[in-house]
Amino acid sequence: MLSTSELERVLAAAGLVAPVHFEEVTGSTNRTAWDLAVGGAPEWTLVAAGHQTAGRGRLDRTWEDVAETSLLFSVVLRPAFDPAYLGVLPLWAGGCMALAIRDVGGPDVRCKWPNDLVVGKRKLGGILCESVVQDERVRFAVVGIGVNLGAPPASVPLSEAVDADPVELLGTFLTRAAIGYDRLSSGAEGALGGAVAAWGAISATLGRTVRVERPGVPPLEGHAEGVDIHGSLIVLAPDGSHVAVSSGDVTHLR
Ligand code: BT5
Image (cartoon, rainbow, N blue to C red):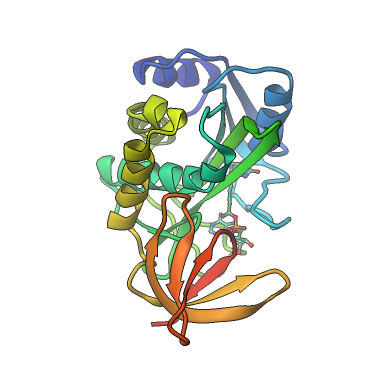
């Protein structure tokens, strides 16, 4: 079971020093982490909950959970890299979590661009990265992750769950994420490229024919060729052009 003392323990075991904040029931851990970040909370401030009443996805969508059958947490980061690299964060976090799930004996989880954790067509986790950029610098980023454990919410079609202990999974994620974060944060090209390559190696999207939907733009169908150093999906369009997609929703067609 998650608790304040368990959060402190797994953070320390990952070699990280930061405040933790646990609530059995909260609105949204991203919201709490955001408020703490605005108030100056340091990197790796960790917020977790047993249940969210206002869990958030991207674009005002909701993240559903069944109380006590999810891992729901957010961390505050203050990457020093150029804000142009913010798109790498969900890929980096998703890659770390997919591998952490495998480490604790879970199934062959893959990453669907930009922020889903999937097994086949079923989604078992999602990542929500929110950030503030000021004076061309990242003031802070909140990386929130939800993973269904034990049972997916019945209200969400095509959802899936993994059988894992939340404390063990969180600890394994933090240990993976802490390794190499400082180089990523510094904007080292090798680290950014490494995070993108690690994501690509366990991606469910690359090599597929996809449809990309973006607000206010006609849908784009094409071949998902790769991901660039900014985390954008490179799609080969039917006219032979390469389109770099920095945000949107992807459907795997073939
Ligand atoms: C996401 O958004 O997938 C990001 C989810 C991030 C959730 C974490 S939990 C901790 C932290 N605090 C928060 O408030 N949020 C973060 P998006 O790509 O927009 O996908 C949202 C869609 O996923 C919804 O519209 C549903 O279709 C689906 N969905 C919602 N809950 C789900 C669940 N538990 N399992 C699988 N799919 C779900």
